[in-house]
Image (spheres, rainbow over the protein chains, first blue to last red):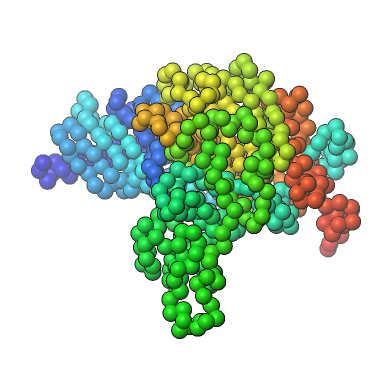
Length: 165
Length: 430
């Protein structure tokens, strides 16, 4: 791959990852799903030094993610604003139609309705850190996210979340 | 205007008709300290599962009532517990949450518990093996045999769980549990179990409020998942609570209709035929153990909650998920998914439960209007009966020598202070 096409690929995939983070921050989940390929698989994983095992905390295919999103209104979802800060690091072109990347992830949490909203509302804190391990493929000339594995370093998440990083 | 203060509410309560507890049991520091001494230091506590210490010289660390504790599987295969503190200068010995002693640490030799500070070394039975330059420094005044680790009562039982007691001479574990494991025990003891999930949450609430959430099902109204898969299904309101001496209680089973949850794409359209030994398909049994342990067996996965109280308004909760040791990879994946769909940190139920108890803490803060928290649902010991709560507080009151509904009786310092505050006219302090 030439230097210019490598830079082009990096720019395209970085934009895709950034766009995805923005849409998730904004809770525009339908538009986020549109960035994914039909075979999309999403997982949240972490290693536990307590039991010395890898753990999978969420594991859905695309239909599963759609259903999870559609059911959010039926659950008591934390109303906090999440801000995903993503830094794309390693990026590999595996073929003309496939690529992968590893990005650092930090999510900041701005309280709204958990805790005393009168006192705590509007305060921000770090919610979690980890990495996105993403795979991409082209579809109709556009890059799509075909797999995302979120590897979390943070294992204490307070009350947790119905949403996903 | 219709208004009622907590004091008026209390006057209208007949304790025999509408049992309640005083909210100060959740908020007062002196009660919390009393609980550490009279309950947490005097109870058998589930601290790990044997699968977390599979090999000889594996260890696990934890904390009970502020005491650091190490659990070690010795070279003889026996699991022992010690205070995780060096008898020399009080430093913590094992710092990792889990690991093994097979490798040397930078200050010591393999197969030893070595204090990083001054390199005192102990074996996996807690016996002191080495004190650097002992003779030069202590001459004959101190021998290794004088300073073994403080061993704690430790038993493995009820499905391979590791139980530890801080008191040197506790009643036997089997006696403390009585018949509480009668319904759940056969499922846990039929085959070896294995932990596949562990996560922790520090929650701003009193530990009892968390245990209460695990001890009453009336709050299923909060969970969409439980409403549609259980509460709206046949058999739910027939589930039966049974209380046992010592503050323990169990709930009988029903068949959970997972397919009722609209999220069929997730994992529910597939036939849920994976279960636990001897458990009916998609059965659901629960056991609450005093003072803060819950075993929740539902379908294919067993969830264990253990509470570590940190203060009157903070608790560390550890959540474990277990399957069978003989699981195939596909079976294990199934159990993990079933477990985390509802109980993982990104599950559908757990964030709601934790949010619920956090909200209770916000409503009952020190010095705010004292509340009288009802435990008064009586439904012939059926699922929404609050017998589990009442039974828990009968044991709590017995242990503490305080009435949970009147923890500061007339004449006590707190009562006098509270009355003075209550009777003071507005602005009296100015």
